[in-house]
Image (cartoon, rainbow, N blue to C red; front, side):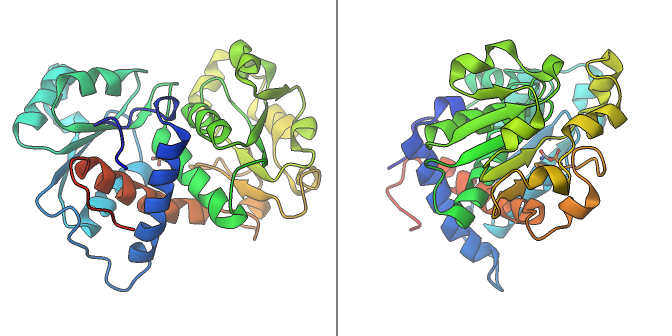
Length: 312
Ligand code: CP
């Protein structure tokens, strides 16, 4: 099979079959990633450009390493020192990159829908590396990959997502992806940070973190976006931690073998205490490694859409 679109803009647009296809390809990529010689020729002759209008460590570096491990020509545009600072529009910047022969442009932008706009205006494939409050599809793919690696499947699993759901593109992509793969998703957070329309999507919304955690197979803490705190959407960091922090006592409500995930970066002592971040149940470090494998798979699949060649 092949991915239907030239772009990866969100999990809302993918079928369950396409998600499985990406995750299965990532399994093979992880074997390559963990091997002694990570250099493969899969992207030889391809050019991959990262264009990030917002800060990033994990997403940007994992795309860059994924490109390099597979022998692509990879370059990063540092927005602050580029012609964006002279007022160049996103479309003009994108077209400029396109005309230099880029095969894939990976975009992070504060505006929801920016990757969709870019994708309509360039020949290159566009990957959404996070757009405003909308989606962060590659994060959700790596989260699902991490869970499936441990549990075998998402079908029937109870997943609790805790925190600032309203501003979280990670939560939105995970809700789209996990429900398509058969998980039962629950959320909890301050009521001002829960989007009112969420219950219509089949997600269970709880007022307390305790209710959401009962019998959960997977617990995902979300980063509290400290920049939003100025808007007074919750009383204080201390209050947030007191009512929604995922400490050991609360986590006992989840299943004994529950997995703990967080997309990073973690505000230690706010969403999770260090004792949980660094515990055996925490998969935060594995998520980072799996992020490279998933991004290798996506780059491979998007640049091979016209080819019958399969990696498996
Ligand atoms: N999880 C995530 O997107 O991290 P970065 O902001 O470091 O890319």
